[in-house]
Image (cartoon, rainbow, N blue to C red; front, side, top):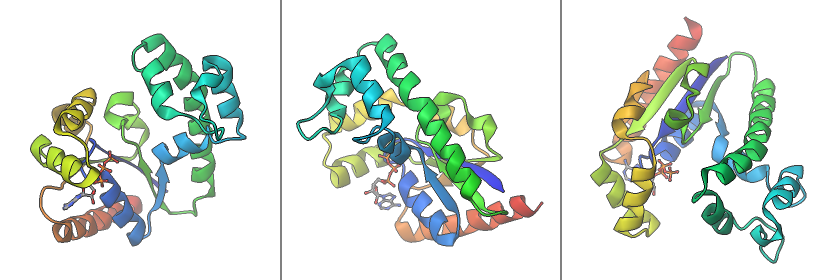
Length: 199
Ligand code: ATP
């Protein structure tokens, strides 16, 4: 098995890359998706979040109101640590379970948006960073996601800088041209991953 960490700042095109790697045959484990699943209604994770932060973080339909919870935790590092202590171990367990289920010899791609921030890069055999200039990311986030420029800029600034992200990269995918170019680059990267797996 080859363990690949895939990361990139918001709007870099990380999801486009992960989708293409899955198309080539990678087993993709999506950390954000798992982080949502572990606090779905009926989970022990959600019960703990409610015990810690109160029923005010629930919507009427019983799902987690992420915006509300976000306002609580992003203004207070202690509260954020409390939330992370509930969510992170559950995410880790689920990721380990999915990894155990991957077939022998699989290329397992962990899509982890905050890999540069969380210090876990050394736990992967290979780290791929998807990179694009801030201006390009801003354009994508405003044009395709409907964010305001200020919002998009604030999100970009809240994450690691491009420079810090590039420091953990073994392979860089520059994604500043079109999706056709991205197809070609990901095909090259896939060949390189297979070579590393078989080395
Ligand atoms: P997030 O961190 O928010 O998940 P991301 O890095 O996963 O962002 P994507 O969702 O892959 O980013 O890309 C952001 C937007 O830009 C999407 O609408 C995507 O289709 C588009 N996009 C990505 N790469 C390109 C490209 N090379 N050409 C045109 N559009 C692109």
